[in-house]
Length: 210
Image (cartoon, rainbow, N blue to C red):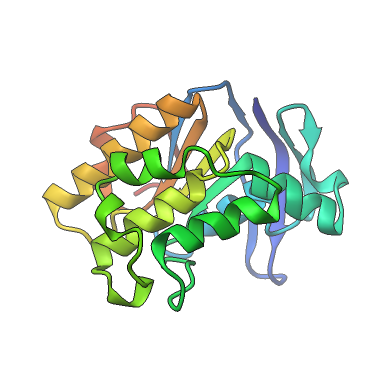
């Protein structure tokens, strides 16, 4: 379902990243661990179609990601990849359900599962609320719901537990795992948070040892 091969990237002559190859089937889980500056977010952005690598290839569901250009890449990413950013990328002036419908609109989906998603994530009663009125934890759940709104094949999460206490960190990781299982999606979490190691056995360390 996902294959990333010979991926290299550099921001300048000093900061060059080489990443291990990744091969995942539907429903697989992978934890990418690394210190700050190790390239964790870089590899997530490459896998998510947001940052073209210097060399190498990313294949999702048989499609070579960076052979797609412009609007074709945007639509493919919106339909097949759900990204949960470290800081919620949701629109504060809109309501919870409007944020999900916007994600549906960009790829021509009808959003039939939106209501069920909000119920499963425990924020259905907030569906008419503006994002600006939500707590940090509620906004994060909206981010998860928006990432899953189009039933993606690949779910990418960037430091989803970094600002959470132990109890809420456990809740968020289990929510991600449950939703990935529901959609039979591959799940990749990138983090420096050692607590997450207890939940996902398949692990890769980037940028040296932790």
